Amino acid sequence: MGRRIKFAAAGIAAASLVAVSASAASAASLGGDAFAGNCHAYILPYSDMYAYGHVDGPANECKVDLWQVNTQTGGSTHTGWGGGVNTWPEYHNDGVHKLSVEVWDINTNQVGWGSWVF
Image (cartoon, rainbow, N blue to C red; front, top):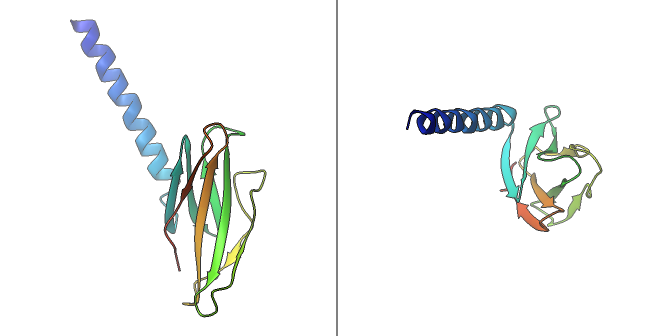
């Protein structure tokens, strides 16, 4: 019985560390969290007027694409599925352009979208 409790406590502690490290990693994010399979993507500030997409997850499994929309014209652009954990920065924070990340877990073929961020 004592062993079961020790293993359960160790499991809970390990799960708590994962949760804390995941939230700490995205603490500076602007939001727009997206999840797919084993992947978590979000938007990080690059400068006052630019931001970029970032993805956490197993190496070579997670891809991130940053989308930008002009709310006045409806025009959009995106960075594409880059090869790394970060996208190129896109312009925003002017009340007109908003950003969203798309995340893809290539092993499970799941795709997720984050909410739009101004």
